[in-house]
Image (cartoon, rainbow, N blue to C red; front, side, top):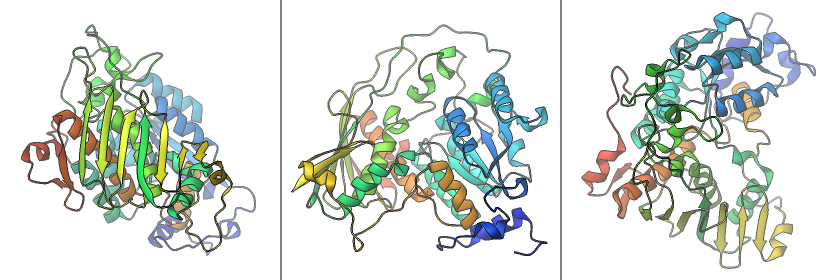
Amino acid sequence: MGTKTSRRGFLRRAAVLGAAPYIIPGSALGLNGAVAPSNRIALGFIGTGGKGTNGLNNFLRCPEAQPVAVCDVDGVAREAARERTGLPAEAAYVDFRDLLARDDVDGVLIATPDHWHALMAIAAARAGKHIYCEKPLSNTIEEGRAVVEAVKRAGVVFQHGTQLRSFGNIRHVCELVRNGRIGTLRSITIGSPPGLAVGPQPLMDVPATLDYDRWLGPAPYKTYTLRRVKAPQELPGWYFISDYSKAGWVAGFGVHDLDLAHWGMDTEHTGPVAVEGEGVFPEDGLFDTVLTFRLSLEYANGITITMTDTGENPHGVRFNGDRGWMHTRGAITCEPASLAREVIGPNDTRLYRSDFHEQNFLDCIRTGRETITPVETAHRATSAALVAGIALRLGRRVQWDPEAERFVNDPEADRLLSYPMRAPWRL
C-alpha cells in the first residue's frame, strides 16, 4: 500500500475483493497496535433512540470505529447522540439523506422504526455506504428483495442486527445440529415473546423537538400520540402497530429466532413452503398486531418449525432430533446431557465465527469478506416472519413459493406482499 493510497480508496478496493479470505496485516494500515485517526472507519448513525443508542455504544467499543455524523428526527435523541460522540452541531442531522450525502462516511448504522429500514438501506447502498441495519430487514417482502438487489448492485458490505449469531454457544449448537450430533433433525420449536396491547390513547400536540412528518415518512398519516412513537418505560408503540411493523413482534423480535433456526437447519437462502397458525389480536386501542400466537412453518426438507409465544414454549430455539434435542438462546440445555460436552472435530462442518457483531461488520469493511448475517440471509429470515404474519392476519393456511417469493394461487395473500407508501416516498 503506497503512501499515495488513501484510506477511503483502500476500503473501496477491499470491498471489491468480495468473500475472499484476505486479511490485511495491521502494519499495512499503519496500525501497529493502535488505530490512527486516518485509518479508522467513519460511521454515521441513523436513528439514535433505544436500539440506536445500544448500537452506538457497541461501535464505540471498537477502536477503529470513528463516529462522524448522527441523525434523528427527535431532537432530544439527536442531541444526546451528538454529545455522546463529541461531534459538532453541524454533524447532527434531521434528514438521513443529508448524512448520506457526506463523502467522508464509510458506513452507517440504521436503527429506526421498521417502516424506514428498507428505504434507508437502499438509499445508503446507492450512496456507496456499507450498512449495518437493525432487524427486521424490511416491513414487507417486496421491500426486502429491493434491499437485497440494491446491496448487491452497489457491492457494499451488509450486516443484519440479528446479533445472536455472534454468541459462541449458539454457533456451537448450530454446528452440532449440522453435524448430526442429535441424529436426524426432525423438527424445531421456537418460543418467542408475545405482543402487547394498549387502550385508546389521547390525541396530543406534536412536541417541538420532533419532526413528526419525517418520523411517519412512508407510513399513513395518523394524529400524534406519545405512545405511538415512544414510551418512557416500555417498548415504543410502533413495534405493535401494523402501519410501522406489519407482522408485529413476530418479525420485530421473532426474526432473531427464525434466523437461528435457519442457521441450524441450513436453510439460510430459502424459506417455508407452507405456513399456518392462529393468533389473538387486540380488540381495540392503539396497537393492532398479534398478541399470542401459534404457528407452523413447513420447509421443503420436511422439517417443520413450531413457533409460539413464550406462554407455551420457553424463550429460544429447540432443535429436535431422533437421538436428542438441544435448546439455546445463549445458554444451552439438552437431552441427553452428554450433548453439552460434544466437540466439533477438524473434519466436521464449521460455521462462520464472529465474537462481536459490530466488530465483524468493521472487519468485513476492511477485507471485503461477507458478514456473518449478509443481506440475503437477513431477507430470508425476515421473509419467514412476514409470511407468518400474513398467515396470522388472514387466519388461514398459505402456500409459499420461496423462489418466486409469491404465494401459490392466492391473490388475496399476494396483495399483502407490499403496500402503497405515502408520497413522496417509494421504493
